[in-house]
Image 1 (cartoon, one colour):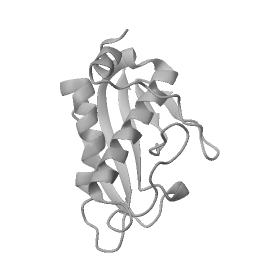
Image 2 (cartoon, rainbow, N blue to C red):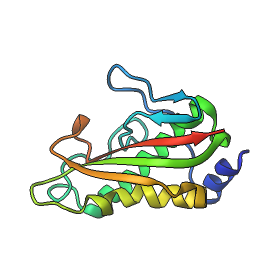
Image 3 (cartoon, rainbow, N blue to C red):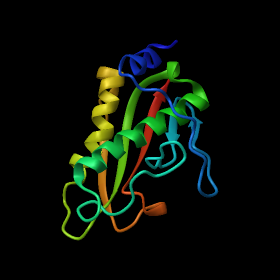
Amino acid sequence: MSDWKARLAELGVDLPPVAAPVAAYVPAVRTGNLVYTSGQLPFENGALPVVGKVGDTVDADTAKSAARVCALNALAAIDALVGLDSVVRIVKVVGFVASADGFTGQPGVINGASEFLGEVFGDAGVHARSAVGVAELPLAAPVEVELIVEVG
């Protein structure tokens, strides 16, 4: 078991199966020493447990938890492509938050992904980030997260 997978086990987290793409793309691609994930939705057991806009039908804490699930799903895509033991560091997180008019808490929502990656990877989980509010996301998901990861 890799160090990262051991850390997930310590946190009581299992990698889920890779989420099936909802359109014409693959979950992750590698170029050189970087892996780029496609945007990951907060699928759990093949379904979205929460849908809607943050600041309206979805509260910020629920969306923050969903962002954590998105990051976990991204790790599953990376593991399926190259194995988590190949991860050197998390380079960048890009998070999209389906936001109700006037909602400005996108950074706090995407902290769900960032904090989780820090728990798993420690210093190697410190990353650059964007947190963007959008009008709508696929399948009415409240949040979507993509990663750029350096691999060895």
